[in-house]
Length: 348
Image (cartoon, rainbow, N blue to C red; front, side):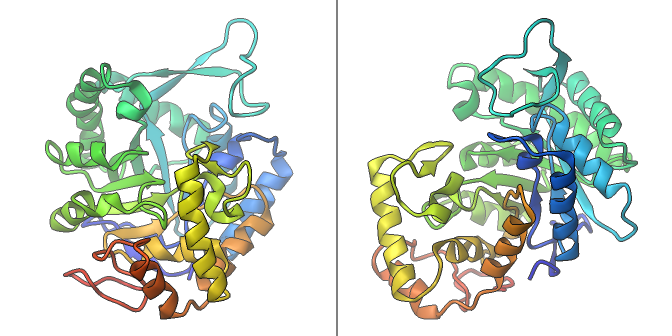
């Protein structure tokens, strides 16, 4: 499956349906040495991954450097995305101890969605990556979830009137191939579509086995506008891999009881059909015709090969039927083997 590709909107960019999420390459929560980072990327490449996502935030430049160092030596085509909205500034003094990235580079992030900052961010990413091109640029973490309801209107205006305008100019100049948002809120993606013609949205954790509210309005609007969706966080920060055990993570924190209860029901149905929970979690979003890729993060070669095994595992249609009958899947979302939405889609 990893070698299959889908096109982003009308851009002509074809991404592999399994992409590589680069946050772990920035030492997210645990250190990763350069050799293991390179080996993990190499195994992903050998498995057919040809879409790689990174961001300045991931290790405060470390993920971009490692990704660029690897891709620089490749001769086959690939698609690379990174993000804008944060500038990295040199740290004066001690490095903060509470950062989510361990042994990261000595920079701090400063939010700035303005035109000039986004132009500078793309230039800085080119330098860190050491590559001649960036295919997709996502405006990173705009939305009230990150910035609060009071600050969001001002920052959203900066992003749409400044940052998005900068990316549109870069696209028209042929310096990037596509742009959109990389966020954890489908609502802000829908808001952006009202004022821009974005190509693609990287939506993390909001179209999964646990959550399908994006189908209410956002995903149908993407189909109407021919905008594509890349799904990040298909495991909802881990609970759809580990199962609902004590300490299971959801949205980067300990899962609340109502999420544990829902995950327990989903896991039981998977067990009844002898299907690993993460296999169902990884395959589910790829059925939606708006979704072009799912990008699990990986910090080891085994994580990569495990994701491929989960993505290719045959799943009986009765599993999806049982999830729907128990109210764990919306009636209007497509599942493998079905075509419930106008426009069809690749159910692989």
